[in-house]
Length: 145
Image (spheres, helix red, strand yellow):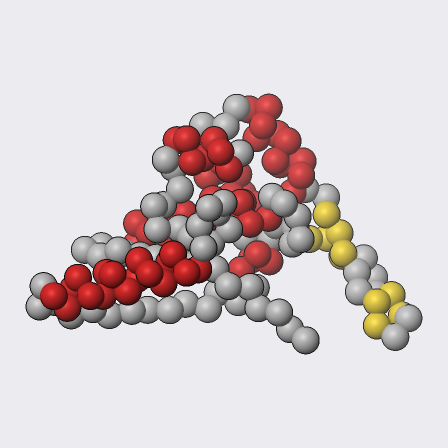
C-alpha cells in the first residue's frame, strides 16, 4: 500500500514521518533550507508545532475509510480495511484486576504495520489547510517510561 501511494504521488511531499527512505534529519534539513530561503528573500519565517496527543487513538474510522475510497482503492480492499478496523475491543489489567472489555470505536491499532500508514492517509489533507506556505510533517512518538 505504501508503494502504491508513493507511485500515485498521493502523500504530501513534505510528509517525513512513517515513510520509507525519509527521516527526521531530512525534515530538519528541509525546514532549515526553507527558513534560510525565506530570510535570504527578506521574508519572515514562522513555525507552528503541533502536539497531536493520542493521534493514533483519535482517528475516525468513517473518515479514514472515505479517504481510502478517495484514493481509489477497490471495493474489496475497502471491505478488508473496514473489517480490519471493526469489532475491536480492549480491557486493562491493573494489579491483577482485569476491567470490563469495551469496544474501540476510534483509532488505528498501535504497534501494527498498518497503523502509521493509515495515520499518514488520515492526516494527508492537513497540508491543504496551509496556504501560501509549506508544511513539513514529522511525527515523533513519545515513549512514556
